[in-house]
Image (cartoon, rainbow, N blue to C red; front, side):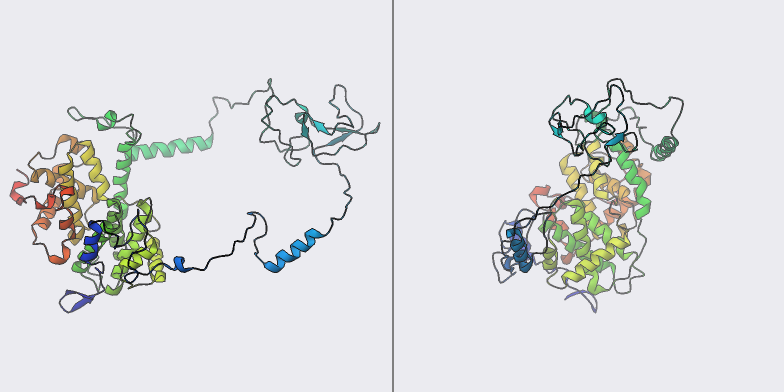
Length: 489
């Protein structure tokens, strides 16, 4: 148990000790599993093997995919006994199939099937030929008597779906004759469904401003420069982010901490710090972390949660986010392990179902990290400046004051603050065009993020600072801060 405030105890939010994470960072094989390694630890005393490793060896029971699925030994014995008995000879009465039409007299120039010809062009027909008399002639349809130009293409011989004069069904592999032409609707007539689709498409285009991207003078056209790069999706990248910005009002989060009787903003900060450590230990994508934190706030804004289940909400949110964003998400046993056995598998699955129901199974939530990458890429920001903006944005996840701010504005404010801290430039016309925001639109958010950086760091919340103090991240956490007066000079 960790004391999170005065006389308030909370469920263990950080069972993953610093020693374990240090061993992970030094590439030792005594930590939790990652996407590239198995989940079994070398020390069985720390973490036993999974139940699947101790499962008994199954008998080598072979069965057909479409055959018997009972796996009953008695049934197999009876089946073998019946197979040994000689098969009884049965006489099947031949019936005239629907594809054979009966006429009284053969017409002139009619293709008549000879009585001694059981096959046609090497293709055996299903219809059995009866004894032909003078008053009754068995005639096959004209489509079945055509010569096959391509021997690889087989004609459909199903009697139920073969096209005849008496049937309305047509064969899926029917070939059009050389003289037949497909019927085309007149150019004057318009389908009513097509008109409805065009109206809806026009409304969507007007709403999202699709296809109208006139780049102002002096602004580099990033999408046009990467037009042939399929990974940049430059043809509709602008439309994608316009659509994401239009979806932000659906996921706005109100101030919910007053309705949470058992929770405080400090408890939420501890939970987010623990989630950052989980993301670093499992080597997850940053999008997974941001989506997990968003799911936590979205769930807490609509449901009342006790302090004993707060960590369960965080673990289930990261579990859902990893399934959505990761190529190989961690197993459920890994999330149970990082919770130090505080919850069972049933409890984690039940919480996962509850979170998905609350968010209505809608996981396409716009997150600030995606906006930040788009703005920095279009403005051709260098990697050290982008890493500093990522540090500011990730550090703001622990600040409860940023919950009510839209993600696109958070991304713009963090990038502007990074440019000012590096003393490079301000909010350029390129950033204004691609983000859709002017400096006055997120000026208050910049001050909010800068105030959060000036707060004295507390020892339980040092995961993000330690992460971005490494040389891999250009040690951006050690860059000197600036005052609010220097932000808009």
